[in-house]
Amino acid sequence: MSNQHHDRKAGMNKTLWNLLQRGRGILQLQPMGCHSQTNGFCAGCEPGQYYQCQTCGYLQPWCKGALDTYEDICDDCWAIAEQMHQAADIPIEGAAE
Image (cartoon, rainbow, N blue to C red; front, side, top):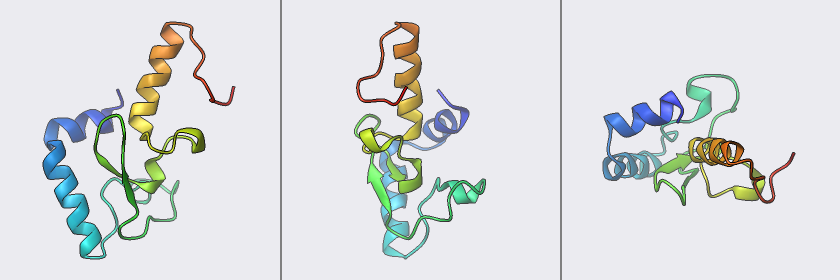
């Protein structure tokens, strides 16, 4: 599990995180966790550009989507799934090799 994902879960429960994320969208503020806040990977998500990860349930900014094939899974959950599949030596269906 990535440190950022672990820190977020340890510091704020999902209900509070999602409430704040929705509130930021209403106030026309950039979503929490956008990559542009920590590095130049993202040009900056627009207010309200978030989705709910189907694995962890957190509202994530668009730039933290994993792959186009699995756009409803956040980067953190994708990394965990990828590690589990590698440990079990099972290829991930639909993933680019």
